[in-house]
Length: 172
Image (cartoon, rainbow, N blue to C red; front, side):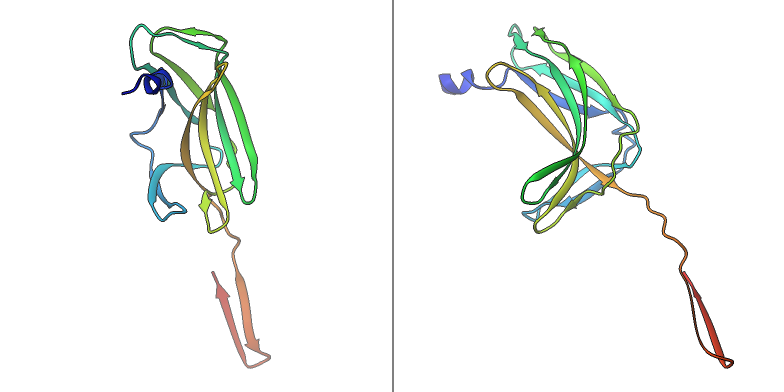
């Protein structure tokens, strides 16, 4: 490894672990390039909680930061991007990290008004984004989530017939 390659590599790794990963369902989603990805499945109104783990690659190093935060973001990308949900939790105030650390987070009953969707010209998705704010360049990690809507459809009733001769009722 070259000197400059080691100089610009991140000091620590950011990992996001959800509280109920063992029991939570996963859903597949096809990406723009045809690959199939699996992400944890959430419904509107469900809480999103877990831990952010910061693991140092080399012991003895230190990381100065201007704050650590996690965001729950819902975003639509068409020609430009529009955030329809943006919830932020501050995990740490400005300071210095000298060893690996974990932070708990929870977005109570987070609103997820739209289902995840990837189409030919549009992408709609929700994700968690951890940011370690630094002077020169922020360290970021995104964690995609799959969102489904539980919709109830009204009863459909249709009547067809010929007056005084034939009468048919359809119910769905």
